[in-house]
Image (cartoon, rainbow, N blue to C red; front, side):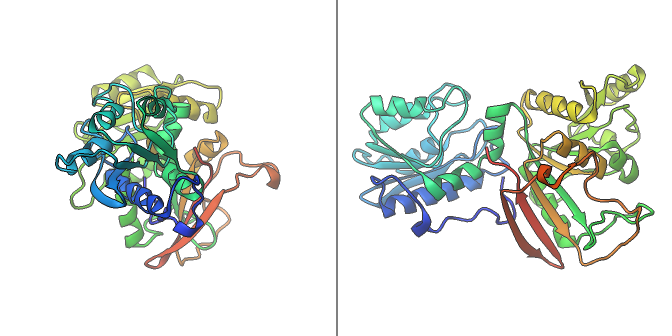
Length: 392
């Protein structure tokens, strides 16, 4: 998923490639990566993929994976060539072509049948059914295969972090979003938090909701705010599933989340200590209830994420919106992959005002979670900090 312009097209002069890949190859591969972004929020649990077909540097056709269950990028790019003989052409694709039968036939078959002579790939597919097999098949068919390296390959991997994490761990990629004052508070000492962030920042969050599979909050936030957690923007093609971490199954049957559950899928994550009657009442009202195991909250978070990743369809990207208690449990479990934090031009003060992240936290500075990248940008009156904590 995209992060408020966090991932930009790389500067070609800084891209390190295999010696067999020319500057024009780099340009066309960068174009394929750009095309793949058109699939954001539309193709999960599949990856975002773009493809370009060219001969002697001239583009013949291009395409991207447009919708889950529909044709893949390579097939769309071949179709866009309009039946032109593709002998001697090169396919540039942002992800290793698939070689297995799923909702669509293998892309390797389509590439071979089209007579394409060379394939340049930006990033690998880490799933067990792929992981280099597609490239081996193409080579066995006499097709030349070149792999990107350096910044261009890294950019392609960043575009598919949710897909890559789910493939490797079985769990969703977690984006934690919060908004705080200059002095690091997310609510006043009386609990008032609406609204710390600017309207433009809140609009951006609605856009992020369209890009993920699910939005999650804790029961404290659900009870205090009675939110909808829907993507309320013009043209939204889908709504994310809503997940409430609610150990005792206390979510009210008269809440907005339960009321809309026939239209927006609601998942309640409870613990084994939840009263059976409360669980059954939520299920009867339309919610799906998952029972998370573990002797403490971080372990229950990890177990819940494994269950969410095993659903059909799986949750591969999750936006964690609150509150501080649940955020702390996710951090203590080591499950946060990226943080997007709005800083508003306010000072709240108050020793009892809440911080964005609670939980146990680090004992020593050396134990703190350290970002591997950090960017800042202006959103109206707010500053948006984006911190990537790990790469898959």
